[in-house]
Image 1 (spheres, rainbow, N blue to C red):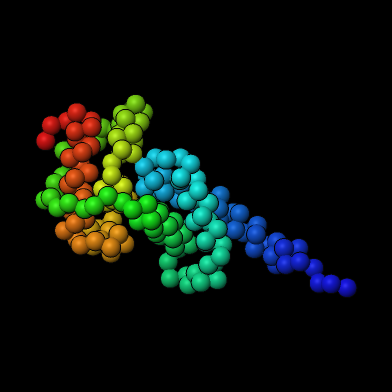
Image 2 (image 1 turned 60 degrees about the vertical axis):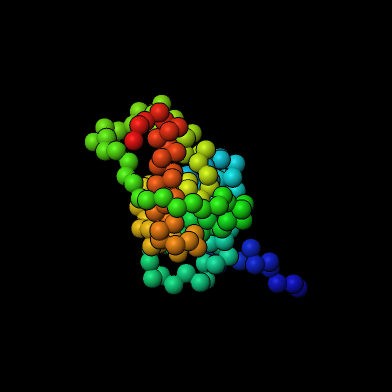
Length: 175
């Protein structure tokens, strides 16, 4: 008699069910972060999200519980998206000084404004978009961005300035 395939064992079924629960709990956050980094390319974001969960399943034994599972998964997904940007031969980097977006108070964006902003972000050069998303949306520090994107801190700041200037131009704002 041959042994049962691994997928049919009770432990494997329990592990699969547990991972499905983790997937349902984290997929929206992971997809959102990856979607922004992918320039709102929904097909690319779906692929990267799927890749992140496949990679998480493969590396689950390496999870050391030094952080929350969601944090570990988020970093894994963002790193995959950043590797994707690098693999697609992102644009050359120019240098500019750091700048800040104008303050708009606590007024939330309406749906049309959000859609317009998302479309504008999607048109940014990949590295500038990645820096903008990681810094302004995800809250990363330039030191972390520069390490993960393999660039100098000053270059990260320059890319953020470039992205913001391009957004202002695309959205019709003056500096």
